[in-house]
Image 1: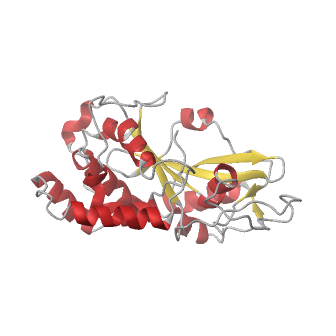
Image 2: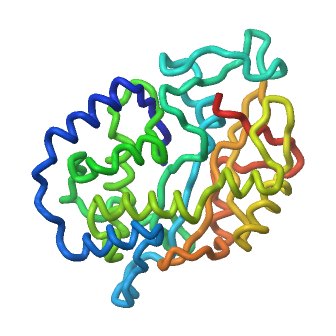
Length: 285
């Protein structure tokens, strides 16, 4: 799956300015999109219609990432990060940490992936689909803070393009996700109103720390108490840091309610968090 990318303020300001100049005369959206906007204003995504029962997938995998953990591994040597002491135990050379140009304080989106029982995907469901940045121009401030692209040396919007074309097109038969804007709007609303992973963890006393480590049971308990289901935890590993929490996923029904993930999801993860090793939950800064 595609990971994160860097987004510097100067790029954000430039793109936001471009959007404001270029799309002041956008045509009115179709009625279905207007209904979606009204729904999202209340913070509740429009559920899928009954006519979608024939879709060739069964549930969503809703995936968020820990910016501190991702940055520690993905972009700690890039120009988007400043070298700072992460933890004296991690490196005799001063450690690695990232200071993003953006004020990212919470868990951020990786994606929402239509998934069929027993497998991964489907993916890339509409070969004719295009990603048009202009379509989500008014969403850019939210996209930058909730769905940032932190991978270094890549195009500002390439992450969003990847998520829409690979995953969003496969969910497009669901009414409120049938357009590029609808897809991103719905996911942003879910992330903002129902799936605040930072809050879920903090309610159980789990905060990012340079010095304190946690167990898989700590994270499982926090999510089970808030959602009623076990999360899929993913960790990255290095010799100096050990296990670092990088990503957490929940399974959602097509009406966006939480469900227990199938066993296949837990058995197939590429970056399992091991129960018998401590987990570092790294701060963003």
